[in-house]
Image (cartoon, rainbow, N blue to C red; front, side, top):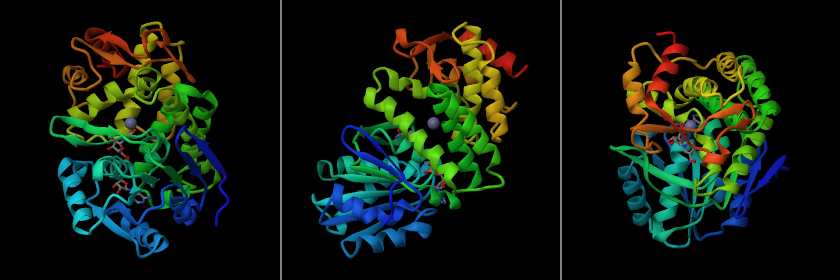
Length: 366
Ligand SMILES: NC(=O)c1ccc[n+]([C@@H]2O[C@H](COP(=O)([O-])OP(=O)(O)OC[C@H]3O[C@@H](n4cnc5c(N)ncnc54)[C@H](O)[C@@H]3O)[C@@H](O)[C@H]2O)c1
Ligand SMILES: [Zn+2]
């Protein structure tokens, strides 16, 4: 039994963050969401490392359902095959789902839980840095469709989140880096001290890969920041929009590259560009963009879009974002490191395309 180093409370559930927390998962599940049967949903990369342990811990009433790893499988088809398998295995209303994996598994298994038998409880066990500090918190679940990412889904809050930073030891470095991009984002949005520490921990990662108490602190504070935001605005009517910082241009770059640029890398580039945009619009203190750029570079993330992508395509793709309004895309923009601008405008600032094009061209010196 592990002593939890940090618990973070949301209105209907608790997030436990501790090295070794996975060892106490069965206890947590039986406390917050006891059920007749347990469906452990994982993917082909995560399951070989951790699923046997989780299934053994939960006992004979649990069963593993594995999806192929990767964003390409966060689909209605995968949702259909998992729910079919659950039905075939005789699972009913008295089932709890355990989402064991990164954000793809979390979103998909959460959507299975939101819909199976009109909704059953689930527990998030995030195994990527991104899933720990971002995707597992806040109750957004869903799948992608050919028309875009996350277009079909539901709000469904987990019964608990159990984050064990020790599992990050097996996370591939490029995904660790992707999580650091979101951690930097949390710092810009809410906490300049956190921003500094993420950069320091991130820059040292090459030598101290994976776990460690520094990573645990990084995860715990990252979760607190996200929890503070979603606690105030569960349905993204206001302040939750600040979490889109770096994502309007980030999503556009992902889209234009046919997803060859990884999400975290695209967000890092998006944050550099969007903070420059905020400076140009006199919303951000001067130097904000330089700080973001140096943070991104120090942890090994890219700071500019690949040359192969055309500026016009990038700007056009900002409207392919479901957060966009026709003509001008909406941006979450910083005021300085640690605080966002636009609180008087619902935290979403419409920016004309020409200005975006100008700034992107200037920053990337094209
Ligand atoms: N619901 C939300 O609020 C929210 C917020 C942000 C992102 N998301 C979603 O999260 C997804 C991205 O999440 P992600 O970056 O975790 O992607 P992911 O789930 O694809 O994980 C990245 C890769 O790492 C592997 N992996 C994960 N944990 C591992 C571990 N401990 N050891 C070894 N391999 C491991 C996965 O199998 C995968 O190959 C996107 O679909 C995005 O839309 C959701
Ligand atoms: Zn993101």
